[in-house]
Image 1 (cartoon, each protein chain N blue to C red):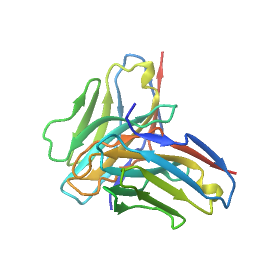
Image 2: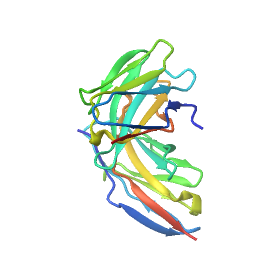
Image 3: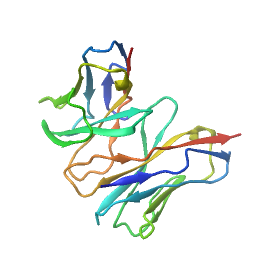
Length: 116
Length: 113
């Protein structure tokens, strides 16, 4: 069975500093995808970044990068130059890929608070 | 705005009642996914439809059912509601098959009193 673990319930970071949110996963699949979503206090789920298990380079999207270490089964999210608007809950998720079923398995989430 | 719409935004009802949550996917998306977010269980996958057919099932209770209509909108029916069904219910969509990103709607917050 697939499982996502986020061990940090809450994190603080100073504005303009970088922060790393941890995510480890467990799967016996060779092919899979890893995602990060952001959920602000308003409740919507916002897609941030995707990493495929066969991608050789770490994914980057603007200030977001994914530190993918396949052997350690970790997919940490790095947010550079934190902004006040980054305060939110962050979810790591996984799906089998490619697959006719795209269901996402989510971790428990990490609450990030950015301090001015 | 993801392009996925969900109605209603909020729903307050009593135990034992039945409710229907509606989702309209992004234009052209064939896959619809339903997720439940609660304090106890976190974010859980409930069910997926692809072009009108059920494609995958997660931890969906027997009291819950869903369908996807020919116009691709989907409805999630929750019956014999219990206090523990109070949660935020998300619908997500994507073109389906091997597409990666799922686009989430704003959610329906269900409160069972």
